[in-house]
Amino acid sequence: MLIWLRANCSSVLTTDGLDANAYAELMTKELRLLMDRHAPVRRKVKRRGKNDCRWLSPEARAAKQLRRRLERRYRRTGKASDKQAFATAAAEAYSSIRKSRADSFREQLAEAHGDQRATWRVANRLLHSKPPTYYSDDDCAHLSSTFSQFFIDKLEKYR
Image (cartoon, rainbow, N blue to C red; front, side):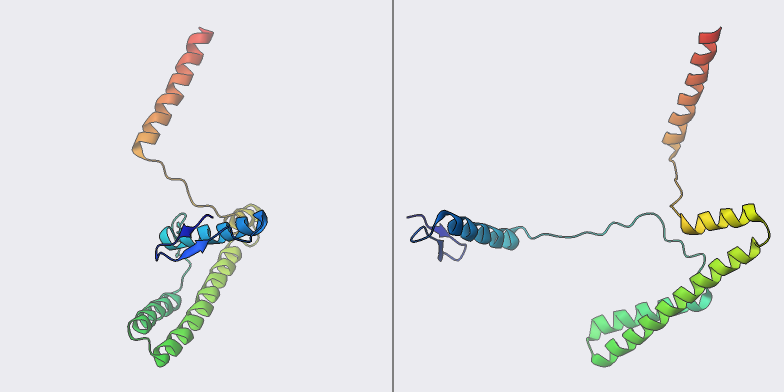
């Protein structure tokens, strides 16, 4: 007879009257329970790139600030009235941010109206946005020395 003891010393796993599949299922469940207790799964969110807020209007910025202020108040007090005020401010901020973003996109496309190349450039920037790549000084120095060495080798080869 095999007995598995939990941290609180109550027997959990026994082989009495269990077939192999049922015992394997019981063991899996107990091991998962122990792992969740002693090494729980944690999720982390990693932000990518910078937050580009150039298109936010002053009204949208004010709405975001009010939303954050009311959220902090709600988390501090836990009152239902603060929760309602925060939810209202969050909905208003969301709509203000979306409106500001749409207005900014519309304005950029209107500025490029009539010029196909500029319109295409704006559309690509809006639709296929990827964060700009920034290189450190060490990376730039390495890249420039690599380029210069490549051309030096090329000139020596043809000389």
